Length: 331
Image (spheres, one colour):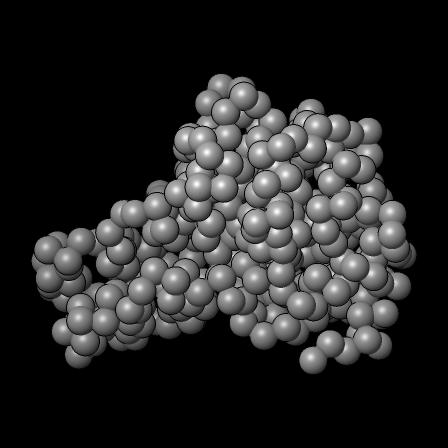
């Protein structure tokens, strides 16, 4: 149920240049007025985020796109008609409204319309019929596990006066659980720059053309694409079903312990020797709970987190991307 008093309190904070932790269907975001330079800079400061990393501007609806983008092309119109509100971010050539402090100095802007009822209603009120937007990266310290509950935001950034956020709105656990798909539509070829819940097959079926994957030399910089990202404090390792027995036995010989995220059948088999085990039965279930499970395992007194990943498919590309980055060696 939407609390109008709470929403109005959040709007007042945003109008005054403050920060609000908001629930979205993907992860919790750290929101600020996308046209207020000082407010946007406070996002970077709170997250300890490099200032050249662009932010996604969250909008109430597609009607606001022409205010932020100079070219609302046909592919973008088809995709927003189909997937907005939802976990798809589109990159377009920016307008004069999208300033360097929100785009990371690039000539493109990233735009999204979230479907979570609280975030969506907040944006509708904040829009005021003008097409205003909120910059809202994940509400966590840079590089760490993204927050999928309000408590994750409280544990990491905290609420003022002790913490960094003026207000944290609790909208329950995030339904999708991983960040949005980022699709670059600013060039000649549609290109996915960050995998997410909306996959290339779904996008291709809407626009009637193939979609490329990954960055090239002239791709815009986007959030969440560093080699090591979304990382727990404990060392995390992706392990195949075939290698898991050997890896767990190797740890046991060193008197070390582990936690496990695995398909249900594998999880049942290894539960007696794992300190804490989480089982999934589908890719959407793994995506929805991955960050929560990583947060929980980080609180355990263990030496390693093992993850048995799903097989690759267009629909699993997003969660496999997060697992790969979370498991990468920190440089």
